[in-house]
Length: 206
Image 1 (cartoon, helix red, strand yellow):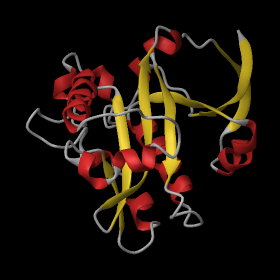
Image 2 (tube, rainbow, N blue to C red):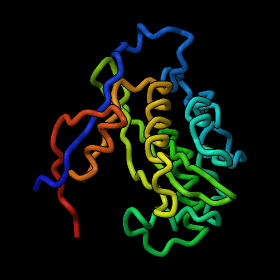
Image 3 (cartoon, rainbow, N blue to C red):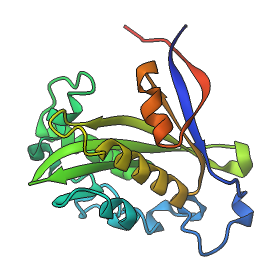
């Protein structure tokens, strides 16, 4: 094992599940997760319901930009071109992309958002909701794969993506969100109101 990156976190005011207001949208209190207002039917092209998108975040985007859930037809909109600026994606066909999309959708804990401009994806980020026994069987949100196209830097799209993930995590009942990042990215995430909390240990398999 070796230390590779810092861990940052944002903690919401804690409310045990049995004390949550009935009016608070809380995905995982439902016995059947498919009844959640934030999950979508198999024939819906969205990974999750657009109702989870924050109007405040949308209002802060540049004119002509939209933030939305990943869609099943996003393969042709430059999704992998943007994701490939973060790390190696490998050769992924549209069929394989759609198969992975369907798996994520069925699991009901993946919330991948995209920023789109002029019909092309220019940024994306993922929230993964972890079910825990701690905190009265609470949920923890994990931020993954935050990337903005290098042609779109300086427009605060990264901040808007993190704002959207924070909005979703709170709406879904998470008591905190955490992420791993390289040390030179810590100042950016501190601007997003995340705090350095721990360290990350890592072991890569061959």
